[in-house]
Image (cartoon, rainbow, N blue to C red; front, side, top):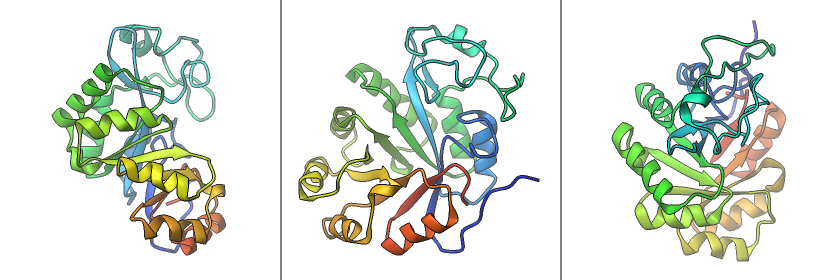
Length: 239
């Protein structure tokens, strides 16, 4: 039986796109699998459809996770919802469909997990406002972490939610300039796990910046990150 890989050291673990090492990524099955384990948080990716609905899927098009090829942001919700997604063996699985943001949040709430929500592309303010409205309706803002590679998304979120937890995604060099950029809007950092070391963590911590690392899938590398002092590890399979 396939299972997660356990790490012995204590750390806040985030299930990447749900427990995507065992279930099809960004599906209700993956979110529930993570909910039934001792993960700190469950991460997903949000897009806005052509008709203004909020769905969770990683890519801009659907062909990697299904037999159909639709633009997520160029298609209506009903067309996207009708797609059957592929299971881990590459075969269509009739119960797997693209979830809504609200469905993901309900699972995080039910299993008492921190929702880690990535805004995939650059959003218009009206769409970020809609995301915030959905979070407030289905979840609790103070239990959610917003992440994005788009700094401007996070700046808008900070204006809408002064106390929200924000993490800037990057694979960049960690230096004083980056720290100042984060401090300007009280952001933490979510960085590729190979870009981190103990000195970098100490620099960020000295400025009150927490560190999340994506996407580490080996026990040895995770334990190195823990020894460096990171605050979170995002993984497809580690628990």
